[in-house]
Length: 202
Image 1 (cartoon, rainbow, N blue to C red):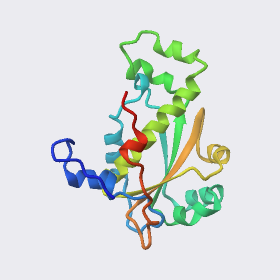
Image 2: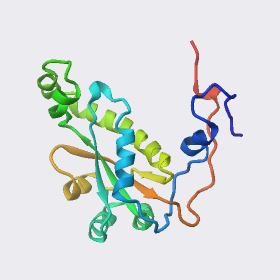
Image 3: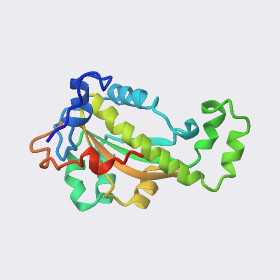
């Protein structure tokens, strides 16, 4: 059963709630309608404002569009993810930039010495992955906010994707297909846990 909050408890209207959450689905097929660079930029320029620790912003994206790049990516996907990736007009390789600290003088300017302190911090790779994973969630909502369907996947050869598409200290954490849904795009909707099953008030 779908639970709808009484009017006034959420700041966004019911149609926005449906677009982002209740009616949004993970797509498994896509139409041929393209997702242009301007639309991708609009998605990024929205989700970049969401919070990360120390404003680290470790999310990095590789937009796979061309037939040549897609042919390089498909063999690196798990077998069950290849057809859906082949059908998507846009596929995003989502990575965590472990050297995010290099940007801290600009993104976190009020903390003097933040770049140097984080450079020496052994927890920096884990921090990058954690915060990029948070940004992955924002990205999925940003794709939905653009009226598109997202298909996030963890089934791929991360080491091979990093070698083929990424550079430096970037670590692949997901691959996300995006576009208008195609025929038979949805699996049956699975149930969600109720508030009482998931939330403990102390």
